[in-house]
Length: 58
Image 1 (cartoon, one colour):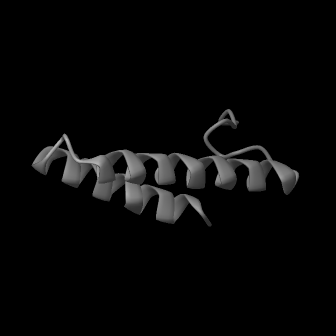
Image 2 (cartoon, rainbow, N blue to C red; image 1 turned 120 degrees about the horizontal axis):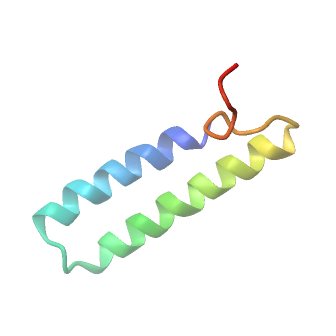
């Protein structure tokens, strides 16, 4: 569930990066997106299932 906000924040990061790549807020947005993605992956692993990106198709 945290992967959706991580994706939205990453999209905002890319949009702002194209506008002005030198802003410090770009680094903050990227860091926040990476933290949320890491927490989402750890929560999915703690739930007993492998992340869907890492599961091989049957």
